[in-house]
Length: 283
Image 1: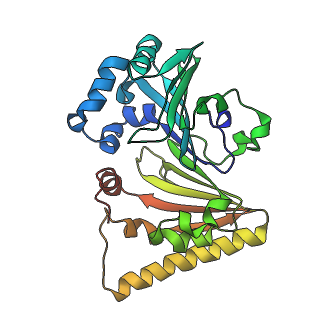
Image 2 (image 1 turned 135 degrees about the horizontal axis):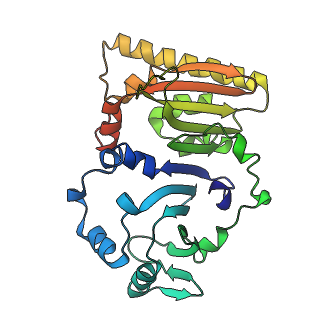
């Protein structure tokens, strides 16, 4: 899925919604169906598609203001095409597009069925979905099967250039972003915590920062440890004890190690924090 997307300087995001749904986590993350707005309920009725029940996997490439995605699930193509045309769009040879330039977005929405259960969709300048297709070696992804995100329910791949642009990183996380600047690519994933076998449901946020050489990976490890220690000292000085739903609890709990040219990090991910993030109440 990822190799089908335009990836040059893109942040890639993958979500296994089926697993989230099977474990009852999707409703926690997405919120209650009761609070869905009328416009989305109208979309469900007219298109026959509801991501809560019909979407199984989603891969997205974030490229500036453009968004390109491959969605796998169950689609009523006839209803989806009819919805696009009733919204002022056009459909020809299976390719549909609703032109932008309205008060909400200058992007156009374009899509086409890759096969019976996969949709290529793009919010971008006109014709953006044409850039999504059969995986091609020239997408310069390297060996996708070697990415350190296998079996992860959620993962994000960030190009190294992102960490080297201070304006692109939220102010509160710049101390950690600066530490990752030497990496050529960085992966974050949500996966079972290390040593959580035996039926445990403990989860963790995991990091794999891939570098060009061992000296860069050692530097990243030292800088991440220093950033973590600095935050711990700051909280101690302010006599603050963050709770399980506070982001600080996650950040001060990081553990780091180096394996060759890759830095691995792990932060325990508490369910209270997940609920707080989903509800917009993270501190």
